[in-house]
Length: 430
Image (cartoon, rainbow, N blue to C red; front, side):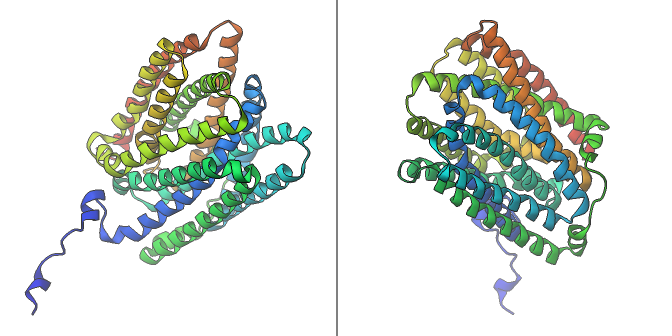
């Protein structure tokens, strides 16, 4: 007998670094690649969307947010209907390929329509990308909540999120590098290709998990049933889900305040569509570079050590500090620092923790109520923030006044985050 054969396998450096078991690597790698491709495709579109929003007039942005809410209100029940009638593999495929068809139509419109029609095309594109992002990412995390257990989510979601951050970094670099040479329309086709590749990763995850777990394979073929309005019903009947709704609402109100403050400062400080697009892309690059470092080396350990409640609370705390700072110094440098810090905290810490809240819940809740919260509730928060910002401007508030108004909302958000952490622990039986 070979003496070395009796020795236990030593964990690899990667296993020690990421706390990943050998049997998890394949599914984890596919999941990270899935998110990488999805986020690369979105972050190719994001700077284009933001520039089109500015080009349509900063004061018209609240109307675009209203249109986005209405579009979400229409699409959310349609998605629930797909979930109710099709197994997971098919409703995810239908959802993503409808998004790809829309990208083809926008490519044609931006390439063929005259300049006089481009402003309205840009406004429709702004609304569509805002809906696209929420649905595509919500479906991704619902699949993850279906594939991984609670204990795995706390260890592995940081690594999976890092894949998305790397994809977002790649998308920002692609747009910043190619928008001057190619223009916006060809970039839409690159995004379309990445979305198709992401869908094939989902298929591969389903095959791999199904080969390891026959029960999971059967669940993948199940049709959940129910109605298109089940998401509303599930959310309204659960205090826990109502708390998640409140967390999402306060997050998006604060995000919208910051988005409008940034748009005002950028419009006043930077001239030209290409320069503004490059600015938004370079902010994305900074955000995603820093987020990647945090997700690879810190997120998993932080979630495992502090728990979901404290990691959820990090973003409200950063927001309190940031809005106070922006109120005291309402200039481009301040908005860049706050934007980067807030988005890094969200992607590296808050988002994985928020997604972990759904893991112990029933499968129907993961796909229906989660999608409602990630899309409709998110856009309601956008709407409240957009029109509250407009009201404050009408009342004569400047950038500093609006920033200070957001501080007490962030304080309420902080308290709610800690409450959700306690409820999550109770669901885990701790």
